[in-house]
Length: 506
Ligand code: SF4
Image 1: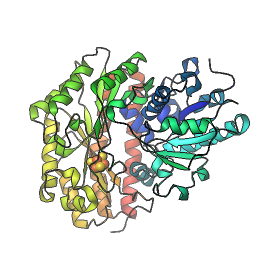
Image 2: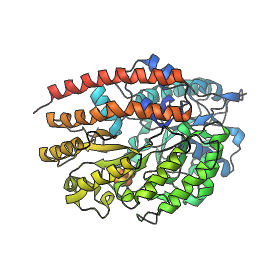
Image 3: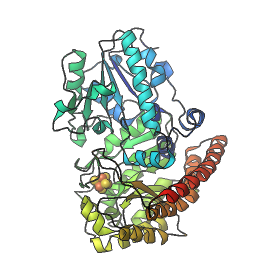
Image 4: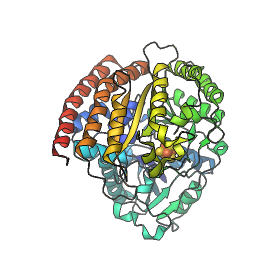
């Protein structure tokens, strides 16, 4: 039962981040929908509400779980903290509430994937719409029951409210209904920030979060959305178009990872996702990969019999190139375990087949030892190696990079066409400057590229979705409904893409 007078600290996130997703693709699908997708489909199929036994949410975004763990480790009474979704806020906020901590991925909808989805399908991206809805609920409950409380926003989208972090006083997050923003990993100073709010002391509009060394990251105290388990954080390769470019990569110790896995398993989250910007770099010294360390980690996770589905998210070409075919195959086998149907997908950032364009856009570091002249060729070779080992690569491409010429676009289009017949998906994202200025206008050639990519996606995305859902044990009815929805999406998106191409300048 929740406390009648509310909790001093209420932690929450919008519904797209707090839903009870069974697999990683569930969360990615929900987050990529725009308000053109009917609310009934979102509410009943794509964003199922998580259970709240005893009033506390069973799952929460990883970032909120780390904040919760850091607060408790820093001496705050766990009984003073509650983690709830938007539907349970009214039970959690009361006269005792002093802080509402919100995690957000898209408070302004500035993420490139979000602006691409909204640009193609129309409407507003759901994470933004749901964030607005959450904030309006929070403000209403605070006004009625806890006017003294302040709203603190963090999470992967915090940068969108605090773009000029070098000049915090120039930022006015209050315009959005948020009183304070914390940017970046914050286990190092989150206790200080919350303590000030609990003591009703002043706090700057924007505080830069302070991370801790990876061996001091506190294990989580509750299960995570999509069964996400952090294995590395940051990246540090420094791509000019990336929000985490300057955060160095650190690898979490095996003990912390396994403790987080066990916490998820204890909450019956048996489909896990090993989260990192580059799985193939787990345990690396700088950019020099240590496949044996990454494989040993997978072996230890797979040895836990309750683990059903083991998913990866990101990987870098330059790291894959350091693994042998046998090691890649071993990773695939460990991910699949004893399931016979699975073809694990992994998101690989290629961005463009034109190496000199990637270099000029600030992407030189991610190319490692690969020269700009051979970037496209090497990417093709590494992706085919993944395919041969039984992976299904999910390639991300950036279109409209500054300095891009029609020849660059044609080069990437020809490169994509070379994959015909291969099991692969390719997701083009329209470049959007990090400062929030307008994205480029796409030409017909750009739309030819986008359409060519979606020919692969229309074929393979529903299949890998089905594969993951089977692996996670999703009921047949749900699998069939999603497949039906996918067929509808294909028809809809074919129309959207054709219309955009027709209207685009030559
Ligand atoms: S390699 Fe990927 S995650 Fe790392 S900085 Fe570049 S785009 Fe960002």
